Image (cartoon, rainbow, N blue to C red):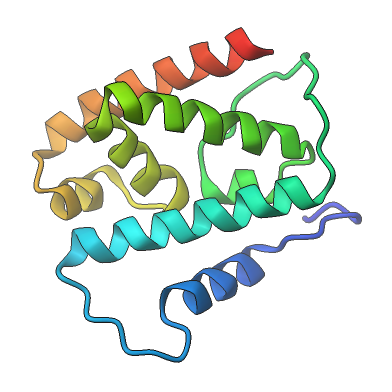
Amino acid sequence: MERPDHTLQATALVHEAYLKLVGERDVPWANRAHFFAAAADAMRRILVDHARARGAAKRGGGRERTPLSVVDLATFSEPQEVLALDDAISRLEKDEPDAAAVVRLRVFAGLTGDQTALALGMSPRQVDRVWAYARAWLVREVDKDA
């Protein structure tokens, strides 16, 4: 069940992402990885823009868990958390671009491990290892900033 004050619903998020991806033009996707990377980036931008629009000031502590799915991010009550996660993913991308790509596809595109492996041309086991590393890294970074 949605919160009464919830302002971004999952269907609205998907619709807005579709419009950002396709709009009124025909986009030639190079491959599945290209499409999913673009979809993940569109979802990320929408969530970050939504969080910023809600007037997020500096975020506070006391969080119990870090949301790591697009549905959790869309329904999360603290926009500062979305911004903090996006900042952490950007820092991860500087040192570990493959890990950031896995995170973006898993979190923002909602792909499974097998789908992510297929999209990135990695083995499922490699994606699982990178995903475990990236989740731990992100939790540590977001907690450090809290």
